[in-house]
Length: 119
Image 1 (cartoon, rainbow, N blue to C red):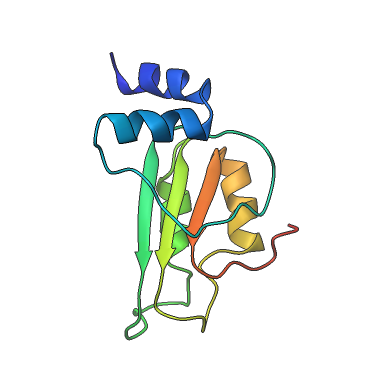
Image 2 (cartoon, rainbow, N blue to C red; image 1 turned 120 degrees about the horizontal axis):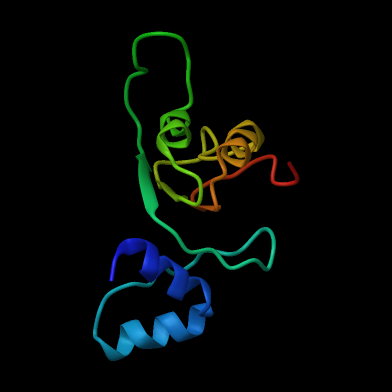
């Protein structure tokens, strides 16, 4: 079974079914303390991960670090972003959401500050 077949099957399941299966198989697979901000839609797909931290600004014009993830993603992919370094800047926002929509990204999971949710 290839990855696309697995994704098709996962799209048919709800979160509790996947969580229960992971528990029965004794596989770690849960993230706590995240709350859904939009839609009732289920998502399943390849995941690109981004871990935002603190540090000196990169050389060149200012650019949100998640921009590269949006550009690297394929249609149907899911971006998972972790930003636990503080709230001095949002880990995700409206401009990135517009870019993700244009690229056909299936969903965003952000463990950190998010702004412009209505966009």
